[in-house]
Length: 306
Image (cartoon, rainbow, N blue to C red):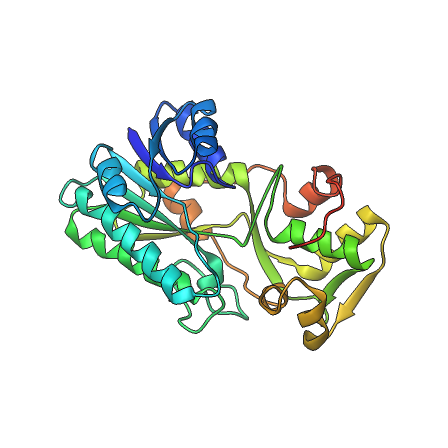
């Protein structure tokens, strides 16, 4: 299969591109810079120059492919409405050339769109007032193509996609611990985050492209819920720091931003049982806490969160 990929040179994208190439697929990747193009070439992919705002480039890339995987997401987080419009427009542009072809369109979202406080499944509706409600418009834009002859599916990734050279939520938590001298959690720390290893997520994206039925919503989750207290305690042991419980008000100033404090206090366990059964996906790589203990997270140079 010839797959057109956006976000192939980002955080999770290189693992996905490598997985696709290793399994015999041909990959063309959207590249908005020379650095991104070089990264894609090093993975065995062909760069396609453009950006999410270059709709002609998106359309031509999708039209030339046997399937599309959309992982890129960006913009100004101070203007979520603009980010939603940008993502929805990109998805609509990518999907139109695939209409009435039966070709796959796989779009990335996150489990943070789901309701808090209970373990959610792929069959549950997202929370339109939730922490990541700005991703819902993209999900819906993708899934509408299922009625138009596109094998459209959504992969909701866990907030923690861990592995080597991570730059996401967990490294920011570690950087804050280094800076403040304590490894913190909020309240009793029993709130839960789903997690998945990047290499397991890469396999899921490949399987979604190869065989996810039209209209599928999939959860990229290997562990349904890791408590934030256990994460903080593992970081504390690795750095030789004490742990501390914060109130929500204290967390708002302790962490990088009030949004990050809200995220670190979020209780959002999620199941992937349906996804695993539907696609035969079986995560095999280290758990989040194993990665924290034995991976490169705590060996990284000290840095301050920005």
